[in-house]
Amino acid sequence: RKEVEQDPGPFNVPEGATVAFNCTYSNSASQSFFWYRQDCRKEPKLLMSVYSSGNEDGRFTAQLNRASQYISLLIRDSKLSDSATYLCVDNAGNMLTFGGGTRLMVKP
Amino acid sequence: NAGVMQNPRHLVRRRGQEARLRCSPMKGHSHVYWYRQLPEEGLKFMVYLQKENIIDESGMPKERFSAEFPKEGPSILRIQQVVRGDSAAYFCASSPEGWSGYTFGSGTRLTVV
Image (cartoon, rainbow over all chains, first blue to last red; front, side, top):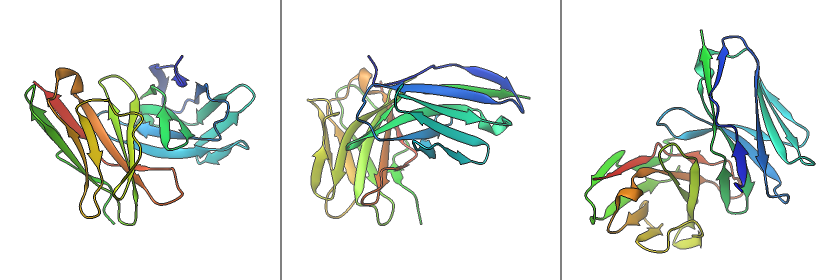
């Protein structure tokens, strides 16, 4: 079983749509998580941290459900520039454990 | 403040040759991490280093791979006797003490022919 699992997608949505990604993790002791964004053939870039209380940054909202061991990312009012792969990340110990990523394609 | 610098950006090696990948962390960052991303796959942790110390190498293949972060100079990931399966993007990341939201370099894409 993978430690961090994501639906690979792709999610094809029109501009302006709201889209949500979920991610599940297997390590019940994990305390902190991130969402990273990776554009094609580029390095991952930190999008936001994920807190138990949830956090919002502009059009992006991240939630953590410890009981069910899943993390979500909600993107409102999608832009063409949001097209990328979104990586769910478990921050455990000395390393980050990455999910395989969910690909988002926003269409005009 | 320059970001994490990796070079070369692209590296082509024939089977059996050695590959050396370099990473200079962001100024003020003392922690360096190496990750590998195989085609169409997620990033996999390889090794975590601080200056002159390997802290965690649990993700490193047992043979042919080594890493160092000397007192002076960049961190080096060395792959001896490369094989086709080593073809991947190798990303380096750095962080300051006590923060785990790394900054990644732009990666080195290794192609073994």
